[in-house]
Every structure is written in structure tokens, then in C-alpha cells.
Image (cartoon, rainbow, N blue to C red; front, side, top):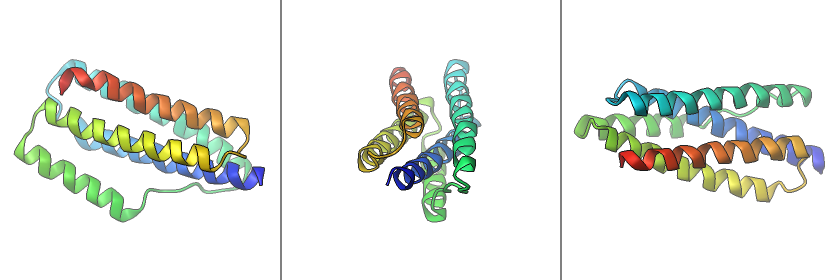
Length: 144
């Protein structure tokens, strides 16, 4: 049970971290403020660091991880493009990213609780990813 929950939690974290990186990449070219660009780039770097750590843990279990569903990625990218076409502002970027952070925190927290038998290393990485998402949402408040 521990190994199954560990792998499942790591997969969900892998999906979440990939979605976070992709979402940030989708908006970075639209950012107007240097300060907002710095916040997003710092957070993207944090996601990339966690992604590497996740991959190392997944490799230990000989698991490939989990990519976000193609439809979710396409829909997210389309929503971002449509909203920024109408309102190409830092406030809209902050709004989109805050929504994404909130969804990430919600789903990762659900999986953290669902896979309670996971090992401590995977739980710790899930907590760090949740904290990274929460921190970004707080930092974006000044731009809403």
C-alpha cells in the first residue's frame, strides 16, 4: 500500500508541476511588468527544480510519471490566449495564474489526503509543491 500510494502521489505531483510550468510559459511573453516577470520566472524555476526531484523519485520506482491530459493542456492554453486577446494586462495574467494556483492547491491537497500511506519523501515534495502554488497566489495579489 505504501508503494502504491507513493507512486500515485508522485504521479499527481508530476502532472501538477508540468501544468504549472506550462501555464507560466503560456503567459510570460505577455507580461508587461518586470517585477511580475521576475515573480513568475522565480516560480517557474521552483517548479522546474521540483520536477527534477520528482523525476528522481519516480525513477527509483521505475515509473514514467504523468503528463497532464492533452485536453486539459489545450483547453488551458486556449483559455489563456482568448482572455489575453481581450485583456492583455498584468491584472488578467494575475487573475488567470491565481485561478490555476487555486486549482493546483485544491487538487494536490486532495491527492495528498487520498494517498495518505505514501512515503515521507513523496509527501514532503507534495507539501513543497502546494506551498509553491500558495506562495505564487499571494505574490500575484498585488497585480489583481
